[in-house]
Amino acid sequence: MVQRSLDDVADTWKKFSAFGAIAYFVYALLPYAYLGMRSASDLSSDWPGRAQALAVSLMFAVVFYGLRNRTPIYWKVIPTLIGIYGLSSILGGAWTFYYRSQPWILVVAFGGPVVLGAFVFFIVWWRKQKSYFAR
Image (tube, rainbow, N blue to C red; front, side, top):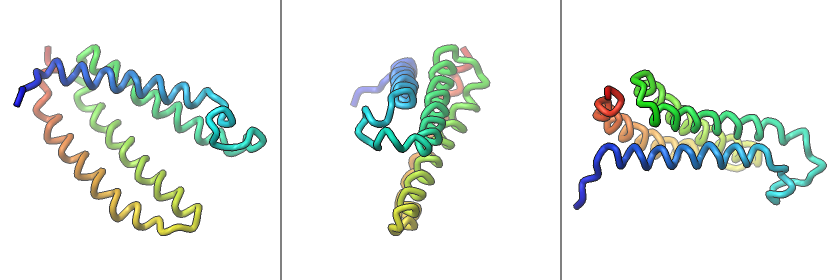
Protein backbone atom coordinates (compact mmCIF):
# COMPACT_ATOMS: atom_id res chain seq x y z
CA MET A 1 0.00 0.00 0.00
CA VAL A 2 1.37 3.39 -0.99
CA GLN A 3 1.59 6.01 1.75
CA ARG A 4 0.50 9.42 0.61
CA SER A 5 2.32 12.42 1.98
CA LEU A 6 0.47 15.07 3.92
CA ASP A 7 0.99 17.55 1.10
CA ASP A 8 -0.71 15.15 -1.35
CA VAL A 9 -3.71 14.79 0.95
CA ALA A 10 -3.89 18.56 1.45
CA ASP A 11 -3.70 19.06 -2.31
CA THR A 12 -6.65 16.70 -2.78
CA TRP A 13 -8.65 18.57 -0.12
CA LYS A 14 -7.79 21.88 -1.81
CA LYS A 15 -9.10 20.62 -5.15
CA PHE A 16 -12.25 19.20 -3.57
CA SER A 17 -13.02 22.38 -1.64
CA ALA A 18 -12.32 24.62 -4.65
CA PHE A 19 -14.61 22.50 -6.82
CA GLY A 20 -17.29 22.53 -4.11
CA ALA A 21 -17.12 26.30 -3.76
CA ILE A 22 -17.44 26.84 -7.51
CA ALA A 23 -20.16 24.20 -7.98
CA TYR A 24 -22.38 25.54 -5.19
CA PHE A 25 -21.83 29.12 -6.33
CA VAL A 26 -22.90 28.28 -9.89
CA TYR A 27 -25.84 26.27 -8.52
CA ALA A 28 -26.96 29.31 -6.51
CA LEU A 29 -26.77 31.62 -9.53
CA LEU A 30 -28.43 29.46 -12.19
CA PRO A 31 -32.20 29.67 -12.47
CA TYR A 32 -33.78 26.50 -11.15
CA ALA A 33 -35.83 26.15 -14.33
CA TYR A 34 -32.58 25.55 -16.25
CA LEU A 35 -31.64 22.80 -13.83
CA GLY A 36 -34.99 21.06 -14.36
CA MET A 37 -35.88 21.24 -10.69
CA ARG A 38 -38.91 23.53 -10.52
CA SER A 39 -41.00 25.73 -12.71
CA ALA A 40 -39.86 29.28 -13.25
CA SER A 41 -43.10 30.61 -11.74
CA ASP A 42 -42.26 29.25 -8.27
CA LEU A 43 -39.73 31.94 -7.34
CA SER A 44 -40.76 32.37 -3.70
CA SER A 45 -39.28 29.03 -2.65
CA ASP A 46 -36.05 29.50 -4.61
CA TRP A 47 -34.43 32.02 -2.27
CA PRO A 48 -33.87 29.79 0.78
CA GLY A 49 -32.22 27.19 -1.44
CA ARG A 50 -30.07 29.83 -3.10
CA ALA A 51 -29.06 31.28 0.27
CA GLN A 52 -28.09 27.82 1.51
CA ALA A 53 -26.09 27.13 -1.66
CA LEU A 54 -24.25 30.44 -1.24
CA ALA A 55 -23.51 29.63 2.41
CA VAL A 56 -22.12 26.21 1.48
CA SER A 57 -20.09 27.83 -1.31
CA LEU A 58 -18.64 30.27 1.20
CA MET A 59 -17.84 27.40 3.58
CA PHE A 60 -15.94 25.52 0.89
CA ALA A 61 -14.11 28.73 -0.05
CA VAL A 62 -13.00 29.20 3.58
CA VAL A 63 -11.76 25.58 3.71
CA PHE A 64 -9.83 26.12 0.47
CA TYR A 65 -8.33 29.38 1.73
CA GLY A 66 -7.35 27.82 5.06
CA LEU A 67 -5.64 24.85 3.42
CA ARG A 68 -3.88 27.08 0.94
CA ASN A 69 -2.48 29.55 3.49
CA ARG A 70 -1.86 27.01 6.30
CA THR A 71 -2.84 29.49 9.00
CA PRO A 72 -3.07 27.69 12.39
CA ILE A 73 -6.54 29.10 13.18
CA TYR A 74 -7.94 27.13 10.26
CA TRP A 75 -6.82 23.90 11.93
CA LYS A 76 -9.66 24.57 14.39
CA VAL A 77 -12.13 26.18 11.97
CA ILE A 78 -12.16 23.55 9.22
CA PRO A 79 -13.53 20.64 11.33
CA THR A 80 -16.29 22.92 12.61
CA LEU A 81 -17.29 23.81 9.07
CA ILE A 82 -17.21 20.18 7.96
CA GLY A 83 -19.40 19.24 10.95
CA ILE A 84 -21.90 21.98 10.15
CA TYR A 85 -22.06 20.79 6.55
CA GLY A 86 -22.68 17.17 7.63
CA LEU A 87 -25.36 18.25 10.10
CA SER A 88 -27.09 20.40 7.50
CA SER A 89 -27.08 17.46 5.08
CA ILE A 90 -28.84 15.19 7.58
CA LEU A 91 -31.30 17.85 8.72
CA GLY A 92 -32.04 18.88 5.13
CA GLY A 93 -32.76 15.28 4.16
CA ALA A 94 -34.96 14.78 7.21
CA TRP A 95 -36.86 18.00 6.49
CA THR A 96 -37.49 16.91 2.89
CA PHE A 97 -38.91 13.59 4.08
CA TYR A 98 -41.00 15.34 6.76
CA TYR A 99 -42.32 17.88 4.24
CA ARG A 100 -43.39 15.06 1.91
CA SER A 101 -45.06 13.15 4.79
CA GLN A 102 -42.61 10.29 4.55
CA PRO A 103 -40.86 8.50 7.43
CA TRP A 104 -38.25 11.21 8.13
CA ILE A 105 -37.10 9.53 11.33
CA LEU A 106 -35.40 6.85 9.20
CA VAL A 107 -33.14 9.48 7.64
CA VAL A 108 -32.07 10.64 11.08
CA ALA A 109 -31.86 7.12 12.52
CA PHE A 110 -29.71 5.69 9.73
CA GLY A 111 -28.05 8.70 8.11
CA GLY A 112 -27.19 10.42 11.38
CA PRO A 113 -24.92 7.67 12.76
CA VAL A 114 -23.20 7.30 9.38
CA VAL A 115 -22.41 11.01 9.19
CA LEU A 116 -21.45 11.08 12.88
CA GLY A 117 -19.14 8.09 12.44
CA ALA A 118 -17.50 9.64 9.40
CA PHE A 119 -17.08 12.91 11.29
CA VAL A 120 -15.48 11.18 14.31
CA PHE A 121 -13.11 9.32 11.97
CA PHE A 122 -12.28 12.65 10.29
CA ILE A 123 -11.61 14.33 13.66
CA VAL A 124 -9.28 11.53 14.76
CA TRP A 125 -7.38 11.87 11.49
CA TRP A 126 -7.48 15.69 11.56
CA ARG A 127 -5.92 15.94 15.04
CA LYS A 128 -2.76 14.37 13.61
CA GLN A 129 -2.50 17.02 10.87
CA LYS A 130 -1.59 19.99 13.06
CA SER A 131 2.00 19.91 11.81
CA TYR A 132 0.77 20.86 8.32
CA PHE A 133 -0.58 24.16 9.65
CA ALA A 134 2.47 24.88 11.84
CA ARG A 135 4.77 25.42 8.88
